[in-house]
Length: 200
Ligand code: GTP
Ligand code: MG
Image 1: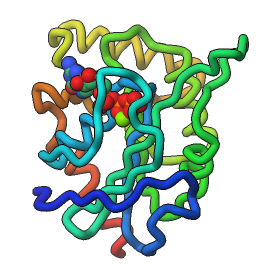
Image 2: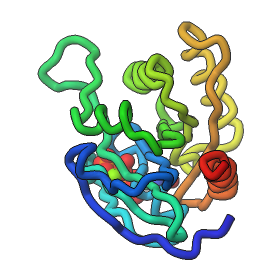
Image 3: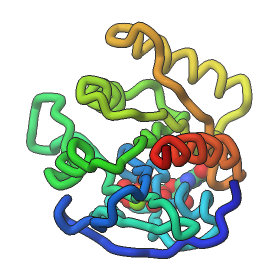
């Protein structure tokens, strides 16, 4: 699938504010702050529609982008640990949570995980949270340009192992790099397949 247009539509701070056209499939990007969500949207769309930064916390709203006039990509704020909390509690916007739990046309969430880091508790907790809430998702290992092929293989095995406590089978994954332009075809293929599901 080719992307011929990518238009910024809106920035929302609640589910109610999100675009209300029905039957438009959408795909959201989530993951820790600075993992590369906004950069991935720019890479996929070959544009600069999403704002990126080397400082974590750049994206603060639910941003909708209309692709090929037919479906949405959604850039979400990153999550992190609550700084004040001693417990390992995931901190993410109440409105992001509500969006993920209730958005009817959300076909799939792409969960970005930095491939350079050993499996992080927060990413595992978030993976489990998506599973518990039956939100369809694909894990996207980002920044794979930063390590070599052998290290990528090892990292994936480590990540699969880390999920084995709670998952019978590791959920689907794709390896990506916005910098080296890796993973685009696979991601767009998945989206195309899911777009077809909503049209039936
Ligand atoms: P928040 O909006 O703060 O949650 O961050 P984000 O996940 O949207 O990250 P963003 O796309 O703004 O990128 C964060 C930093 O990572 C920037 O300095 C990017 O240049 C860098 N970055 C993003 N993708 C890649 C990648 O594939 N490879 C490398 N090497 N750097 C990347
Ligand atoms: Mg961002």
